[in-house]
Image (cartoon, rainbow, N blue to C red; front, side, top):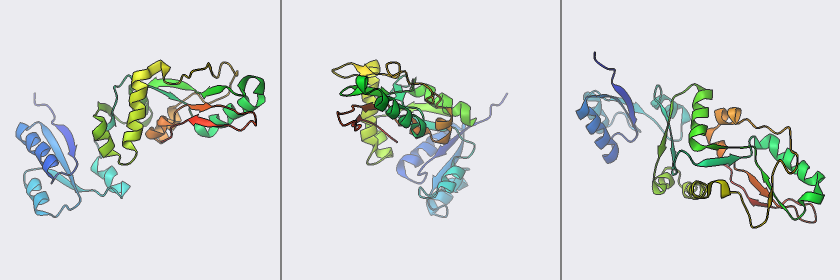
Amino acid sequence: MKTEPKFITVIRATGIQGGSVIAAALKSGNWKIRGVTRNINSEASNALASKGVEMVTADWNDESTLVKAFENGKYVQLFPVSEDTPITTVGDPKVNTGIYALAIFSQSQLTIGRIVLAQSETRTTREIINLWSQMSGKPAEYVQVLLNYYDNLWPKWGREIGLVLQFWETARENSWTADEPVLTKEDLSVSGHDKSLDLIVLENLTIVLTASVYWKPAESRMLTVIGCLTS
């Protein structure tokens, strides 16, 4: 029984690297290929089309063209860490930041001069991708890449976030510790905060990287943020 060929979308199809991937896929005969290029009427694009490659145009500054380019494909999330890296999150920052802030203000006898970890839950990077796939109904794959590749993919901030992710991968349960005891939601009896990542993940996968926040209230009751990562 003949199997259905797998589907692959290749970015920069007319470039050296993209062209190499397409050439290998054509040679294997096991792939249905879609090539993405800025100029679908170029000689290189026409040459690929003549070989059976479905050529589409896409502009990184036009989201609608990108959606079309990846239509019917799988979503791939690239991270510079292993899929069991723990991500500790504050949950919905629009809701939970205020809840934690008021808990700190109202219990100054416990919090002044102390560090508070505003944390709702911890999930691995793989669990977060699976959650997004479940909520969106779209298939997704997790792929670990080198930090330099991640930095090239997301210029200016890729390396910074990548290093933070690698720290969490190494430190794991010690990622949010300090020289002094850290107060948690249990210590402050915080309740009513949004524990679920479901809607956040569905709305924007990268917002999951909104990490827990370290707060160290000073005598003036001003909150000093000493550790925070947002997407």
